[in-house]
Length: 218
Ligand SMILES: C[S@@+](CC[C@H](N)C(=O)[O-])C[C@H]1O[C@@H](n2cnc3c(N)ncnc32)[C@H](O)[C@@H]1O
Image (cartoon, rainbow, N blue to C red; front, side):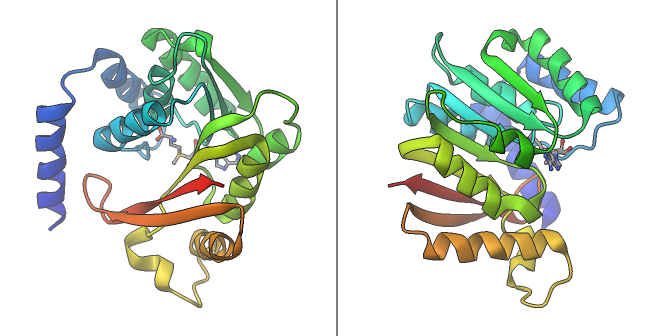
């Protein structure tokens, strides 16, 4: 089944995405510099791009940069006066991402902050609110990151949280995998939080069986 999912993702990318030198170069640079291949897929990247455009996003928050593959997709969705803050723990990942942003011509829109996302977020506030957030870092802190995104966002903000199905692992009530515990805590939070409307969509494809949360701040 996994081979079929991969082939269909390749068909979708071939039909609807086309060749993209900057994104291909970013993935090649990530691999050359030893970053793990855990970026979103091409089809998912384009979905993020489209959702950010549909939301009319001018200010985007991203938690979890890696080499900036998803960041480049999101930055391209911004208008000329738009901006994106992306948070990354690992200095090496951040350095590679900066190279990729430069090559893709989006550096001017991106504010990359290195450190624990929880600390970076706690230090934020007072700027224009965010319109859109993509959360894709350490899954154990997902509920905290959504809470902070809501604090830093506007009414109507779109929030996407990646990897919330984990090949069905989300159903494991007694899991000792802290990523699953964190994912379940996110669902518990969303189910009880009056500030957001949320759903989750399962996906299969190049990134296997997983899914994302889609939420809108009331
Ligand atoms: C799945 S990757 C992000 C992929 C990226 N969004 C993409 O699709 O191209 C997760 C990233 O989150 C970073 N990360 C892990 N824990 C973090 C933390 N506490 N604060 C900030 N970033 C963290 C990892 O170093 C890694 O680069």
